[in-house]
Amino acid sequence: MNCRFRRLGIVLGGLLVFASLQFSCGGKSDNGADKSAGEKKFNAGKAQLDYQLLQAELKLAEKEQVYLELRFDLKQLRLMLKGAVVWSYPLDLSEQDSDDISDFVDMFRGSSGILARPLSETYLYAAQEKTPDSVLAIISEVTKFKPELLQRELPQRFQLHWGDNVILDIKTDVQGKPTSKFKNTMLEVRHVIQSTLGEAHLTVKMDATHALTLFRVAQPGLPTLIFPPSA
Amino acid sequence: MRALIWIGVGLVVVIAAILIILLKMTAVKEPTGHVVAVIADSSLARLPDNQKLAQKELQKTRAKMATLKPKTPYIVIDCHANKIFLRTEDSVMLEANCSTGSGGELIDSVTGHKWIFDTPRGVFKVRNKITGPWWRKPDWAFIEENEKIPKDEADRMDPNVMGDYALGFGEGFFIHGTIYERLLGINVTHGCVRVGTDDLEKLFKAVPVGTPIYIF
Image (cartoon, rainbow over all chains, first blue to last red):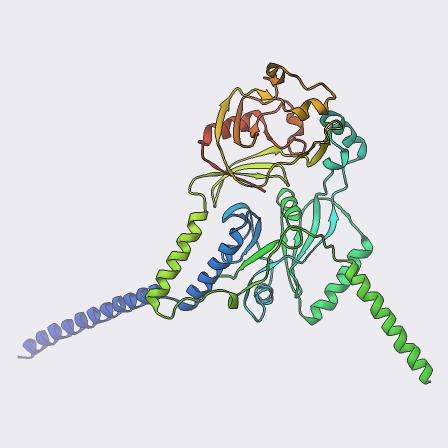
């Protein structure tokens, strides 16, 4: 009799364990389904931002004019022409504080949610020494162009300003000379003063060729579109 | 005592004024053709509250943006760094040095006609592909050399300067070869885009007629 009860107990116990295992597995699977449904759920906030960014970009792409994209979502800087990428560079901000990045985005966007602004100022801190006139004279003799047309400044360090103390600092490995020690010092003083009042300042290291293009394209007025980091 | 305070205040005002002037001096501003207003959330349309309508509207706008983007690999000419690329949105398939327009001017002292040697900027496409191109020297090529403009068309033809291939992109502008490879990377041309022999061959073979060309 005892043996029969023991067997029944074992069978019932086994059934109980099996049922509980099934239940727990089923529970897990249901949770997974809920999660994936949740992920697919329409994110109204993100959709609204995407929609407005698309509209802003369509406005900029109407003209045959280059515009700059600060793609924090893709970690890229891009120059665009009619919606096509014509220049890109990784936006490596690994050495930056994450607060600096969010400050930059917040200050760029301001209280009215700005998505695109024109570049307000550029400042060249230091550049490679200009090609000696004697060398240019030889090239000029061959090409029959004025030597000054052949001159170029390969930037070592320059800044892009968008107003409201939003600044992107570009640094390269080019060996250069300061354009003006006095002006550079004054600008540093200005940054110190502004940083106490609130300044968004990011630094990007760039190779010389990419920096040259960006420096020459980045004239005041260059339309700039910001894509905030993905949530 | 009061006089000293006023002198102190005056000094502070003068120093502040000098500082403001100096800070203004540090900013470099150059007028350009860019005219763009600030674009803020408030100036843009919002998605409808209805989720289905919102999704539809978002899809429509994405499709509109997609029509602008090139569907095939495209050529990019960077006149600032004198580089030419064959690329897609995400990858660069070919990168080479090139030479683009110098921006120089030439004025014909007889007629007063003026030429500006710039590479045109904007969006173009490969209109024709030529193997073994000859250069038909325009008037400015003779004026520049202080030579008489020939009456015979054959005297304008030069088979030796455009390299092995040429890609025409309209109004007499070409991507072509050069005998001055040492000048690649410098803005020295009359508006055409010069590319080195090997890179030109790769580019020529890779792109069909109709390939978009973006020049900036």
